[in-house]
Image 1 (cartoon, rainbow, N blue to C red):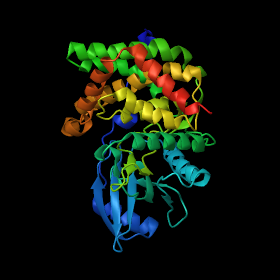
Image 2: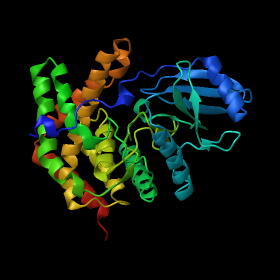
Image 3: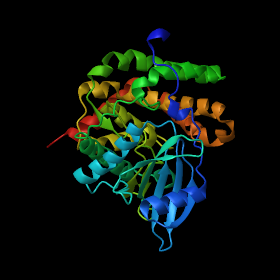
Image 4: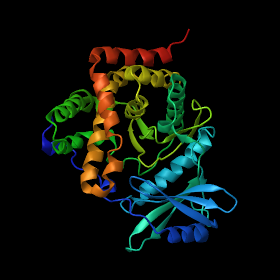
Length: 358
């Protein structure tokens, strides 16, 4: 275990600031004055930002984001430029399209009621429903895996000065999550989370700097993946670039895999669906495959520990923050019923199966 003096500790500023809403009438004024779009806004929940659906009189919809006051302006610019880059490199990836201001800006800074500045971005509103709310299937999971691979390929040529900025959901800083574990009063739960963190420190930390890295989406979860409600195997949108960062690409894969388990009776089979199709386009190295399962477990620890911590900071939003916690514990229970060596072998086989050529 690393000594506390050598560990990244704490939660980033972006999660210590609540998603304070900008008044609806002010949001409508900004949309009209800066974008020439006259419509009505509807508040949409976000973990960090003030989000609105803007609907014009003709029925057109846009997503209007007034970003968290703690977000660095460089990060705001990076997210906008990444969307433009993906659109240019692989226009068939269904990401939101940037709507420029009347002055041609991809995003801009506004001054809020407290005198602080906040980034503002307008994008298209993508069709579909969240994958989480749709029926799941092997074909759907395979399609999601393929899209993650295409996203990584598109972003592999993207660079930005802010890409190394520290964010809480970056697994490179997961060591600091161990400091949150005392908030779990159940000894068995705490031991399970600590065991996963032990694995991260022993298996991943020593090789982390040598893992292939690039700018990654970093939040390929079922709420950020939209599917067609009529044909739920069809992925209709990938949203929310707000957690993107320069990091080992296997962490990006682990994030996607951790969510694709859903409520499948065999969570490993669900992950393998995702990995097999991903691997037809991107080949993970032996070193990446070796740490993949530990990275998946680390993301699961983050999924319960970070929301639990935020629920204590903002108790009025507790139900929202911990809404997915029971699902994660159920997934861990199903994984723990399978020998670790079996899981690791099955994940490796899925990656190699995708790379196999006749």
